[in-house]
Length: 343
Image (cartoon, rainbow, N blue to C red; front, top):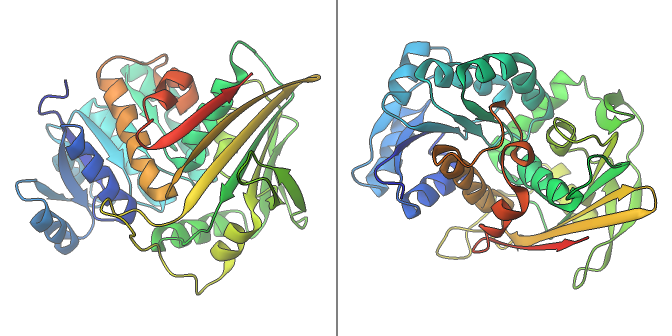
């Protein structure tokens, strides 16, 4: 069905970018390898013979135009997205093609919604930020759990990660976000983002079995606080992180992920538990899988596939839950994650 559609991958040689390239090939697409480092692109191309190499930098619009020439869509995997998102979105708009990124940076995603909503809608194209484990998956799960509800009082997204070995890109993006917030923390409450210096609470979260009740860090705020409120009437969106994973991320000497299988995935497992509440009623959605970076690839590639085949519900800048049929989308990822819905 995909034919020979070419998809530009900016940041193709990065940790997540490599998973995206592999997923595109598995799905019959032709990745166009792009990024800032020509030597790393050539090294990647050597392991993937026949793929085009198109170096580009965000401060050179002409190079981005060359990188996207002939592409049906672009997936941006290169952080920090505070630096890369806007120039690559601009290039996608000039090329007249859809844009998808895997940004987990809260402020970068806000910038995309703020600065490109009108232009992308006027161009009749689709821009999907945060189409990744953080932001996209949580939004799909919340949307699926909501079902026919048009509003809810609260949405809770609890991340039960067995561990978190961050990539260099994750650490860099976190540092950039921290600088933009001037070291403050962020939460979504009463229908708006709030920046604060309060200590983060520790509490027990009742994850489904076999994980069971675990200690989590409350208000460990991820990109879901941007994606969910962008299209759902939920004034309180709260995210939580398993204490062990939060500790791994905070430790400066935690190593990067290492592969344990032929697909290059790490041994990390995850359980994402979503609860939405409206009055006394409660609905739940759960996703289980392996390796948060690896699972980002099928999320992003499935998004591109659906956009190119016209299976979208919105134009302009839109989060995953707004632009796609959430239960159907999650069901299509059965080879990569297990999805349960409890209403």
